[in-house]
Length: 186
Image 1 (cartoon, one colour):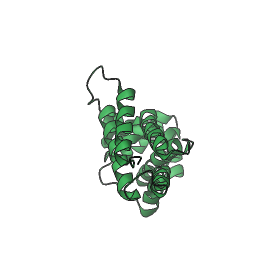
Image 2 (spheres, helix red, strand yellow):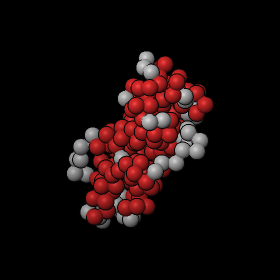
Image 3 (cartoon, helix red, strand yellow):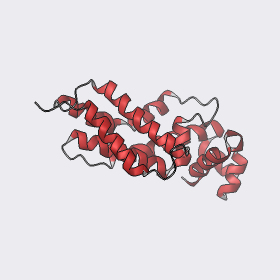
Image 4 (cartoon, one colour):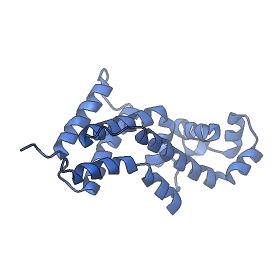
């Protein structure tokens, strides 16, 4: 874990050129032999970093306990998404920012990444099945993911106005977005 966190920190702070196994080992207080033993080389390290980033996101999303109200749960998942990004900002760019030029996840890593979003799809599918949401689950999932990703990306990159109450704005935006997908009561 420490090696993966440090690799993410190097990428986030200094870019892909800063990530060498020699530097990573020195920064983590271990040997390059240990890094090679664990990962087999830089491509495998980068793949594992990608998988770990999504694993952490998935853990945050799975920690949201269903309330029985899909609209409430959808907002809670959005808040958990933000918390995950704020807890591990050094991994956010690995997942979505193209932090490692040329890196393409293999099919297994891609499947693990998609699995992280399973709680989102489950809440939306439940809401669609119960008639709470009015659109198809895939379209809604992509729309919801897009709004949380966009707002979190703006926040992490420092592109929000100074003095903005970010948690309040974020939750208000999530609630408004969720209302847009919600079937109006008769």
